[in-house]
Image 1 (cartoon, rainbow, N blue to C red):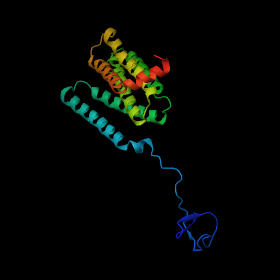
Image 2: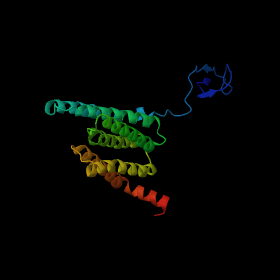
Image 3: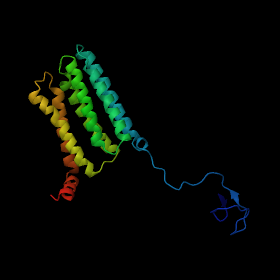
Length: 221
């Protein structure tokens, strides 16, 4: 596109002089002004937030291994923590890539991983690590992933209602183990239930009015 520096106008066509002022036309080259604004990707927009979460994840893994080596050398629970963190990031990656139905994606992942861990535990003679460690850790990880995804993807009020139901499901699963599972190690299940209760309370406290309005709109309550 050509440009007249005197008139400060861009001209379409092939001119040697400006049809308005008669000045010499200068070629502006191949650089054209962007018609649409540059929209940053999710990773660019939340770069600092994602870096902070990565740092927290690394710190949790390092601290877990340090505590495991210093105080509980007879067990290897720190590897489960590291595996849980890795699974959380893998889940978050696929959720961001396939963000059309986040709760459904998370439920499927929790269901598949939980089923595989139960089958693996059963094949080893039922040690109980699947319901004592793996499933509560997966439920907590899923709730963390949903909270991060809600922040990054800017989930609306409609989906927050679904998130509350999913969080309730994740918090209810370890309650079954606590009541009927005869657990040797109870703290992962207790942490999962407590985390779910805190998360649901935060949603109700900070988004209660919006959720109530959405329920009134949908169900005429």
